[in-house]
Amino acid sequence: MSQQCVDPIVGKILAGWRYDISGLAPEMRGDYESHFADCERCRSRQRLHRIIDVGLIALASVSGGVFLLAFGVIRHFGPRHALWLEIAALVGFALSALIWLVVAVATPAPVTVLDAAKQGARLVHDRLPPEIRERLPEEIRVKITGT
Ligand SMILES: [Zn+2]
Image (tube, rainbow, N blue to C red):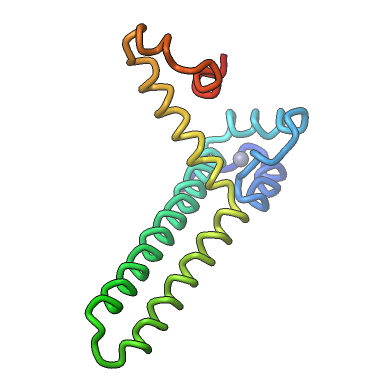
């Protein structure tokens, strides 16, 4: 990345927050939002960090699923040393769950995923025929479209 941060002091603060301002009160966000608007470097860093967060969550989910599957397979076929294999699979699952939790708590990944899900839902909603759209319960429509 060759670009320079347009305001290194603000850039440093943002770096300390891992470029996440989703937890800030709206009235405190203004300066940082305008920095993201002005600063290509911080914007791309923000994108990178969110990709890493979501990637970690996805990876932890997949590995947790694989360990659980392994546990089921071992249970089903009952090979020799099954107990140790089962314990290993459970430990692997517990570790994956722990990583998942830590990432979910320490990073804005859930917010990012939720936003993406909302955007997807809105896209589907907008493509629905009007007669179906009308039948959606009011509260769901509000949640999707925000109006
Ligand atoms: Zn910057």
